[in-house]
Length: 606
Image (cartoon, rainbow, N blue to C red; front, side, top):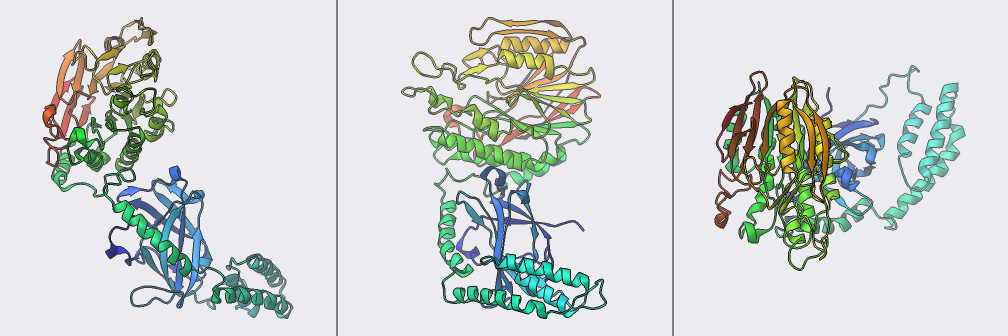
């Protein structure tokens, strides 16, 4: 029988839940004497899995085992204190831990009443609501053994093993040594227990001494610990529920919002499973910059859009978040980094398909890093934060990168489709003579010679039956949009390379741009199957064929139109969100864009 995963939420909202008992006995129970019992827990916090690896959290559980009262509670008066503290080896991933519980957790018949939790060495500690499951009797005298019956010495071994579970002082080691001797005597047929009584008496007296210290109040009990920790838990609960504490919280606590449920069902029905399906979302602009997006923090709702695409992701072969995932935040980079981390965590948690995240011009807070009176990189989000948040250094789904680059390619298994993600914001953090950013992403789109070389020699080096789709944030200058941003570096060279791949030609890419030179040879012996080039950035939708290449602009996910005086036009309506599923029919070289929310479906050939 498969091990059941029990989902526990460490977010405990509202006073009405503080004494709630979660009965998991339908999924898990134990028996006295059981050892190494597997219990699998998935920890979430308001719908999002806990980041155990990142925060070096380890699992624990603590409580009482004994006779429950009518409220399913076991107290110090009716039970025995038990606890388990795990390690990083217990972590499975995806918020899951496996606890191989020792026999000490089930010392007597009755029930377990306590709680699960996570903790680290830096003082972080989160707990679940109270938990209940049954512990049944093990009928110790009904045994299958090599001997015909349970001898008195074997019964003594059972009792000594239970006593050995005490962790006070060095008594556990004493009992373990004694158990070894008893086992040896059993093996040699010596059933005389008199030899051991003196040693048992000494050990028992020592244990009674510890118990007396507990009775006298000289050693903290579990009740003492709970009494000390409960006020801390209460304060944490209040802090987490505080709406203005946006630095500590993500904004997906409510889950999928009611305004989207009908559209999600409709979208699932419209995705054709016979096609290669790629999800594309862009320009979410998740931020708390309410002075720009409206007085009610409207753009904070953007991160919930990831839950929408996540709901259909089991039908997708791949998905890409194509830049401007987050927006500039007023002040230094502190809030921007937090938003980026939240975005990455939510994206890779919500989606059930392989996926990746590209950069846009707003993600790094460069509009503030270049603004008047701000010098250096004080307000800029460093690229190292994107590498971590967007999982660029782990090749999470087997995608290929140039080191830990933001650009990548991914081959969809058994489908002969390659997704190429281009980073058209490779801007260096170079400073000008005045100490300000020379090439801020907010107004400069840079593609370096290193990326173009990688594209020519690696990403576009495919077999003749492989079909390639290209995705990037900013549309290539001179294609579907002229001057999509103030300065576009090497866009013309990228356009030349993609047309060469499409037409099957050879040559050399060159650019004399001082800071971003290019000298790259390319050789395509056969015409390539270029599905199209998909971009966002402009907050508009468009489609054009230029020199035989399909260029597509995808609508913004953030709830606004391009009428900037009224940015909050669609917020909190069914049209607040917008993204696409790109369905590819490789046999007939056809593409169908199915739009969620705002936007018009599109069909074309390649």
